[in-house]
Length: 173
Image 1 (cartoon, rainbow, N blue to C red):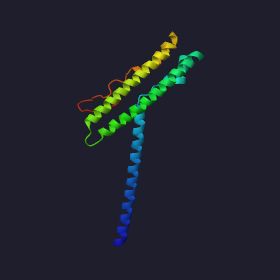
Image 2: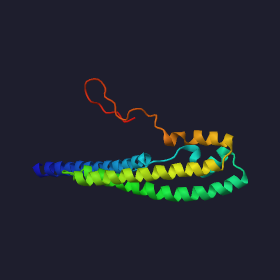
Image 3: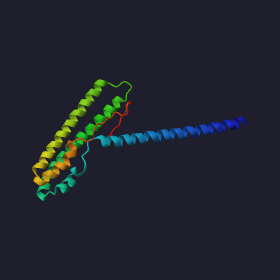
Image 4: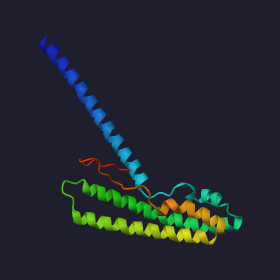
């Protein structure tokens, strides 16, 4: 009987370890996927009608305006695509460095400077695109264009981190 109990105990031990390993792997995969989604959301994205077709419809462009817009939009989208890709890579590199046991602060500063440079380039491309589109708009369309671009150039999310009570509970809004 003793050997039989030992086999039964070992069998249950193996089952528990297998379940633990499967749940650990599933958790890791879930967190990786969640982090990728969050990184995608954090990268600078432009809301609603700022996508080409929707913006043209929103502004009620004529055929001639559409033709001019297509050229500007294509150039803009190519430029910001490269910048956004570089921004995401730099942000990932910074976060990877920060997770190390002894992060290299010099490397963190360099990566942060690169992120700032890229963000500046993105804003420059964006305002230049805005000005090009504004040139082809009439007064009514310019008012609509201003409303469409307002979220890109303003931040009304309040403080990113807030203190609550005496303890420091960080809240990412």
